[in-house]
Image 1 (tube, rainbow over the protein chains, first blue to last red):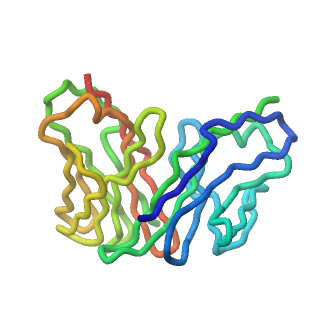
Image 2 (cartoon, rainbow over the protein chains, first blue to last red; image 1 turned 180 degrees about the horizontal axis):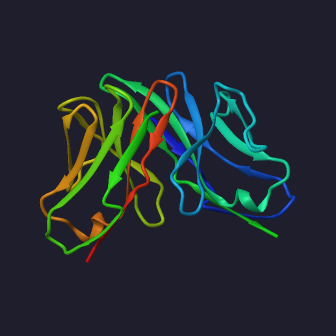
Length: 111
Length: 110
């Protein structure tokens, strides 16, 4: 069965420092991975997806199939990056597509 | 444009009471629909997903059930709530590219 692991529950960094959120997945098929973010008092929203190979709000994530990882990185963290981040894996089941989330990492950017 | 509505936003229910959380989607047809729960100190857990009217897949055994009486309506229910049912419940819908979430419902069972 598929699984998504985010080993860090909390990451605390200073403004301007680099930040990296780790995500590892377990899936026998071809993975489709996402990062979602939930800012305080807002709904969960998509940050980026691996197939787009895009940079959103300065964040990037590279899919490493050899290491089964999809770590999220930003070279210079900002205070507004403080939020809850979830890594997610989409799989296609007989009953439809399913999104499996990791446990989440809370990022706190200190001034 | 598509929107998703979920209600109620918060509720406090006694142990043993029933539960009904509703979710509706506008601006799309035949969406995949999901119920997730975020328990305190834990991540998002998929509870149910549905690919069509009356088609429900359950991910984990629990005290909850889901129904899809209409194409764009998804309901999460319980006949008798347990303390462990407390948490933050999220409804979501998806198209092939991505998934969109409602604003969530905070449930406290006392």
